[in-house]
Length: 259
Ligand code: HXC
Image 1 (cartoon, helix red, strand yellow):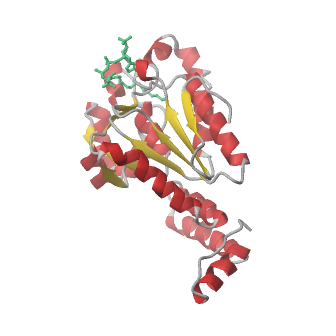
Image 2 (tube, protein in one colour):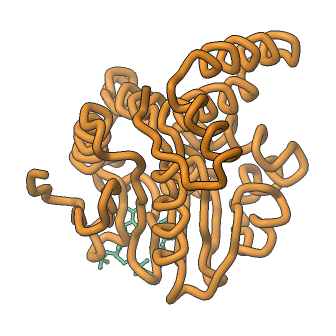
Image 3 (tube, protein in one colour):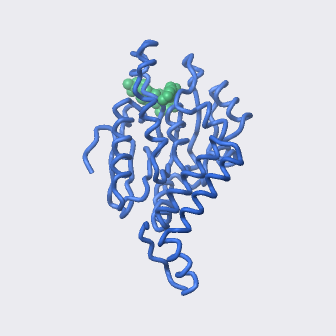
């Protein structure tokens, strides 16, 4: 994979791409360039059948401190109106393979919103999540109102967005923003282990599962159930489904082919 200015890419784990946000001098603040580079990685992973999932991480102290405030300060209202970043966020949201976030330290503003674009979040016990935009006279702009309220519920989302107060890893776990907490030294390792486990599963089923689960954010129950049933029906016609059931009865490990 090519070199990026703002991301370090680790291809050493088979079937995975590990992306490390690499702007430590600005606490991993998310510039437009960084988001474009991230979208480029995702596009490459989408097109490569051998790659099954991505892991996104930051440094041990900061996952990402939000939108880059120098860049933001330079934009007037028309600049914000014509900003290309909403389109890039949409690409991240539409990425069809699993994204696992390994979060140590601060995930603030756009950083917390990036966390919410991940499918599974593993947090170090030093992680802090927050939407401090209110302190800057703005509000979250990449899902920090809409995804947050759907993820943690009204009480906590209102508290976080209106007060700017951060929540701890423990609070994020009990609110459902985070799937697991570990010691910071093991956050990335655990995220990779989970990504490897998912990479070993039948890819068509993984893809359908992600797509259908995310529909629950957008649809009524009945429509969501229809999506689920359709995906379930489609998967029953795959070779991998036959292989999975055959392997169960033959008491052996299945060999999935993504067909
Ligand atoms: C640009 C940033 C930055 C940011 C930190 N820096 N956050 N630069 N954009 N978001 C820079 C600082 O200016 C400073 O540069 C250097 O990084 C170190 O920052 P410190 O504050 O000294 O570090 P520390 O004491 O470790 O505190 C870390 C921190 C704090 C808690 C993460 O930096 C912080 O609160 N940052 C801003 C968080 C924030 O408000 N996020 C929301 C952004 S708005 P120098 O040159 O002095 O060394 C947003 C809207 C999203 O995200 C809209 C849709 C995407």
